[in-house]
Length: 261
Image (cartoon, rainbow, N blue to C red; front, side):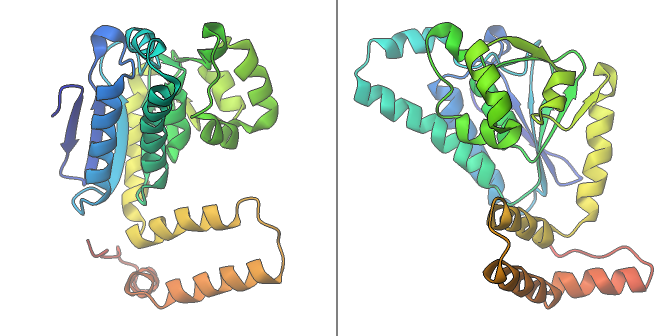
């Protein structure tokens, strides 16, 4: 546990990272950003954690940037603001690049930079009561640092609307535009995530890591001979791994596979 986070790894190899600034709706300041980055790096390297859940304490998932912190940075130089923004950029890059399944457990308000956290997670499950806003334009700002991940999730067309209007939208609309995967009743949120974790733990961890890399390789790529060569090579390599052999053998022998940690 840190000043702004709690981190727990349970007996199912699931790491839960909880934003712990409920008194300010888990607003993102420099301390929380740095501590979250460090925690995610550590969990990425920790073999005891197979799945990671990003959650939050209190009424909100996160209200986005801490306005007191933003006001302080307004008096800093442009170079100091650049360095500060780089910290958030590094956090998002670390979360996006973790080669383990990541889940955003979403409730309450999700504003501004917090939508970047959601967009970087592999899977996003939200309570039907969740409310979203890319709110930067109402502060005379733009969601620049989170934009690569958010635009990838919702597409340019939806981004043109919500980056400019900064309006609030509900969980159903967040799902419609591709920001989240599933909307559930508030009292079913943990149950739904637990069921999803069952599926994730049944799959091979090396295959999951390779799948995330594969998506980056093929997303938006031109389908040509070079891409076909690349994907065939990946397929052949995975078939020869110990995990690949174990998975096929377990299926044929009608037993559960034994994945190596």
